[in-house]
Length: 455
Image 1: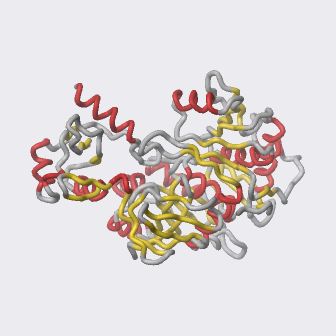
Image 2: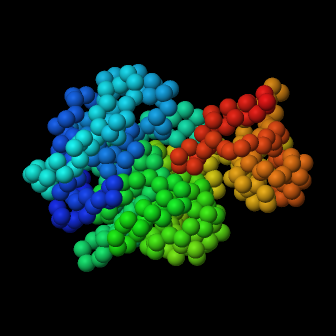
Image 3: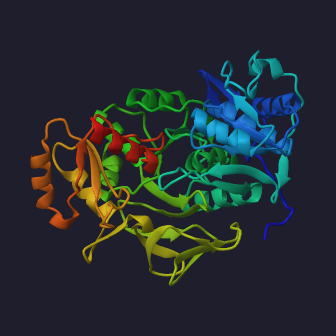
């Protein structure tokens, strides 16, 4: 159970410490907290805030101001009109926090950062003791929708902070921004509305004294430029899809000290290549929107995951359950897990990924590994559409492979997997409908498959 203990918004050493790098300028802790106070004064009354800030500094300011006003931040999986309509209907009186100049029709919009810039707040008093009750509801995050409709997940401030502290300790990040060491800056390629980005970019910087880069770069040259902005040590938070693109491009990066990866299984060989080419240790983090961060591993060294401090796992006939100091009761995990102890395990993929056809078993993760290992395949996914009219299970695949024919690809797959798992239909497409974290929402796959069949 969470107590009424108050936990600080940030843990940097002094008001003049570097907090962020924004629009080519350094931002101090003093300036950040002044912006939080300023936005809190400007916010209209209302229970819920929709934080759509793409700017990381603006997002962090909005998060702090919402906590100060005891308003709950909503972090949607996207800003598509249909998503925003659903949120507006579910949370009446919703206030939308945006970047400067951004507007969403039919919604009350407030710019998170002052229109005159942070320099206009230099006379603001400094408040070093900004802290909030551990049991205060801080945010409602939403699942990615990769297995269906996004679902809301309520997060208290204590749950978020304690999860981030546990992960930081397990990863060895806690000392990177501490006194006696050079400043460590953080660049992330992932959206901060997603739980991974919220915890491992925004909150990791706030709670471990790191310097937050205000941009979210995607292209390799932009990632290199953002890293070059930062003085001292550097940390990159990314996904397997973004990391693979970065390595394939070959753009030289400034020296890195740490790489963190999540959102999808990372192939051990990709981790080994990344460490060799980028010169920094690469760690993975495992979790989900329902629980937040649960476990870590250094992928090049071991297949085993180690739970962060305070997390315990157990199994019964339903599956694997997670519990811990900062979790509300037990949560059933949607993955196939092989327990080595109550804190160590091997991950075998999502429960929904298990495939049983004519008495033979496999997993979508296994099939996708072999599909994407075929020479000439740039990207591809095997997935399970709805069952056919006869109730039989049929796999489908969408593939980006400009130089291959269906006959050639199926022949190469037949050499790697049991023919009963060959995908039919197999459709060639120009690009897969990946979301900003690299995931493939099920609804988007079904739409693309349907459209390809009509063409």
